[in-house]
Length: 209
Image (cartoon, rainbow, N blue to C red; front, top):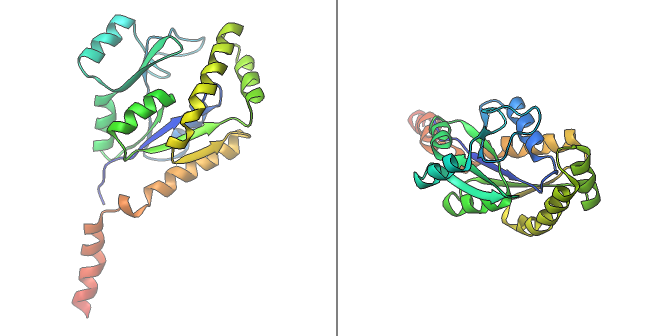
């Protein structure tokens, strides 16, 4: 029943919890790889190169753009973010499912090239909750929080382009819903190897009859 891996694309306004959900679900679900993006953003306290992001300077990033190394890339909050084409294709070619934690701009670019992906949008219960989450994480100055909230208002209009919507009111519940989406997508008929079904069941039944 060999098959290519599924790409799960998860987007959300900054502060809605998508990164925590993506990382946690990749730990819980077998054969699911969390994709680490490249970025020109400086690391936040505690972030590790190669684990949270591949942190590179702008010249290195743009050189990768010129070499077509990214399957998608976008500028977000003044910094560049991109997904490695080579890593993504290597995982999916080996039958490994991949969860991408990317903003809606990058997701829409990817969707034009890869419509077979599963597109999932995460929302907070309200803008006030989103504002408080951004403040509570203490990684951005007040003006940056305001910019992120304004960007969220613009990005949310893209929610109709996604196939699933999860409202992250309570983390454990949202995590179960994200896990449920992944497990359900894996057993959709379009993911099945129909020739295996034919060989294992249909032809065997025909012989017995």
